[in-house]
Amino acid sequence: MLDDEQLATARRRNWLVRDLPANRPAPALSGSLAGLSYFAKDLFDIAGSVTTAGSAALAGRTAASADAALIGQLSAVGAQLCGTTNMDPLAYGFVTSNPHFGRAMNPHDPERICGGSSGGSAAVVAAGLVPFALSSDTSGSIRVPAAFCGVYGYKPSAGWLDGDGMQALSPTLDRPGLLARDAAMLARLFDVLTRKARATGGAPLRVARLGGYLREGCAPEILEAVDHFAHVAGARTMIEVPWAAAARGAAYVLVAAEAGQTHLRQLARQAEVFDEQTRHRLAAAALVPQAWVSRAHAVRQAVLNQFDMLFADHDLLLAPAVPCLAPLAQALDRSADDDRLPLRASLGIYTQPISLVGAPVVAVPLPTRSGLPTAVQVIARPDADSRLMGWVTDIAAAL
Amino acid sequence: MTRSGTSGLHHDVRHRLRAAGLGNLASEASAITAHWQVILTMAAAFDAPAIAAGDSEDGGPQGA
Image (cartoon, rainbow over all chains, first blue to last red; front, side, top):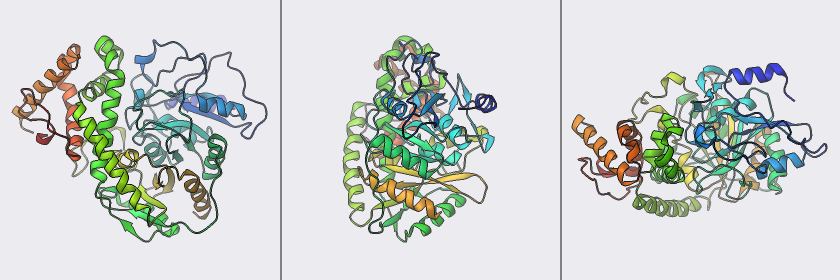
C-alpha cells in the first residue's frame, strides 16, 4: 500500500481523482498479483461509486452497482485498487488538464504535461507509486502519456481486454489498456487479463520502421531514440505508408462524431454541466455530418486492407509515439513550427492513424539525449497480440 | 483565413448548432468555431464529401 507521503505527492501533482468507497471489500488474499497495488483511470466503474470520467457532467449518475470487468479480474487475483487517476474530461484530449482536478504534472518536470487522456495513470506508474495502472486508448490516450512519462503501455486488439464497465468515448475505437513500469509487469498482466499465452522464441520476427507521415515533423532526439531501438531490433527497412494522413483524419472525425453523439442530448439540455473547453469541443464534434462518418468508415476499410498487406513481408512495425518531448504546459496552444494546427491538436499525429486500423500496440519507453523520455510504438497485425507481447518481453531484456 | 472567412465560418457554425438542436450554444459559436476548424482540417485530409455550407463562404471541408 502507499504511504502518506506518496499520496500527498500524488494529490499535490494532480494525479488522483476518486478515493474508494469506505466499505469496499478487500481483494483476494492469494493470487498471481497478490500484494500489488494499482490505480485505475477515472472512467472504470467501481461498485458504490459514481463513474465521472473526470467530468462534472456525469456526476449526477447513479453509483455503479458492480466493478468494471478488469477491476473484478484484478481483485480475483489479489491486486489492490487504490483509487482513480486524473484524465482529460470524458477522455477527450491529449493533455490531462482537468478543470476540476487540475493539470497532471509530469513526474520528470512539473512544468511539463503528462499527456493524455490517461496522464494521471502514467504519472503514478512513472513516479513509482504503483507498478501498473488500468487505462484506455481511443486515439492515443495510453501511448502519448506512456511516451511523455516514460512507461510501458499496451493498447490491445478489440476484445483482448474486457471493456465492460468502462465509460465510452468512441465505441468504434475505444480500447481498455494498461500502463506498466516495465515489460515484465506488462507481460504478467497480459497473462492474467487475456488468459492467452505469449508467443516467445521461434523464428526471429521481421521488423520494419514506418516512414513518411509517421516520421514527419518528429523531434530529432526522438527519431534518434527510435532508430537506435530499430537497430537493436534488427529493423533495417523503412516502409512508406501513403494512407497515414487520411487515416489520421478519418480516425479524428470518427471519434469526434461518436463523442458528439454520445453527449448530444445532455449538451442540448444541460450544457452548463460540461466545463467550457469540453463543451465547445463536443459541440463542434456534434456537428459532424453523417456523410463524413460514412466516408470515414469507407476510408477505414480501405486502410485496413492496405495495412494488412504490410504484414505479408513483416511481423512488426515501428513508429514514434509522439512528435515531441513532453511539452511545457504554456506551449500547448502555440502552433508547431510549420504546422497550422496548435501543438495541442498535433500530439496524436502518429497514434491516430494506427488507432483507425485497430492494431495492437505496445509503447516501449526510450531514453533520449535530452534526459526526457519518449516511446516507440511496436505495432502488430490485429489479433497478433500474443506474438507482439512475447517479442516485447524478449527485446526489453536486450535494451 | 481572412477576417470575412472567419466571420462566415462563425455564422455557419451558429446555423449548424441550431440545426443540430444545440441552439442553446449559439452564443458560444465563436469558441466552438475554433474546434470546428480542426475538424474541417481533418475531414479535408481524407477527402470528406462537401457538405451544404449554409450561408458560410467557406463551403465545408474543401474550403477549410
